[in-house]
Image (cartoon, rainbow, N blue to C red):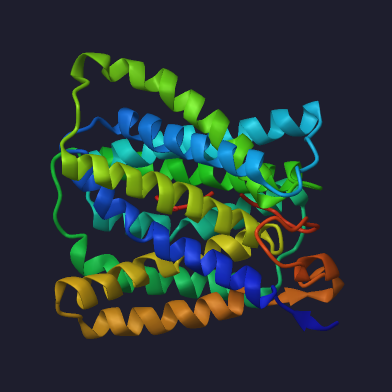
Length: 327
């Protein structure tokens, strides 16, 4: 049996999504000072749905319209991975800390792998299991130094973030099943549309606190919509269609690593030896987690098609996330 892994483009796409999402926790924390967590989701994904709708309309080749069953599955996956996940993430980050969010997201590959085992009743290659465990340990080493402070409600926030991981795993597995024959733009549009609708209804709970955000918060909301939602989810869905969901979510362990690198490069923060060690362990774990066993590997002929609108064959997931995702 040959060991094969995902295509280079698929890996690069998921890594790029992780790079976008690595900033979403800190950005969300800033916006929460002016906008409620449910309203953030409504604005962010409402804007993203509008942009994706324009992309679908302006596409040179109109994607094949998903049938009724596919639309139901895509909408359900979008509700799970966007509304449910980001409600839990935004409220969780509000009650807890951005560092805790990054740390807990490191457990999402384990959750996704367990959901895959239950749903598909398939055995995971030993290198992938080892890689997921290693990457989780590495993520803990990277963020543990910043996760030692928090408010009295921090434990509740952490629980909500863990529940968000289960929603993200369900989004990945269900979204993969529903995306057959659809391109990344179409899949992301239908999922985002459902997620935005769910957030719009949920945000009514904060109607009494609505106010116009200041210029800083408004610009950050646009960044969350354009970079983290449209860009991040398009890239993630593109890569996810060409690899197992547990592999894609494992790559998201790079999120805390990217976050630390950004803090060092942009903010001049010092870096600790344990964080360097954790970064090395994450990279090794992600590399091991990409190994696929047998002919069912992701690098199929269809996976070689270029562009974000190429049709897909193999996929198990969808954030996403952070995510946090924040993804």
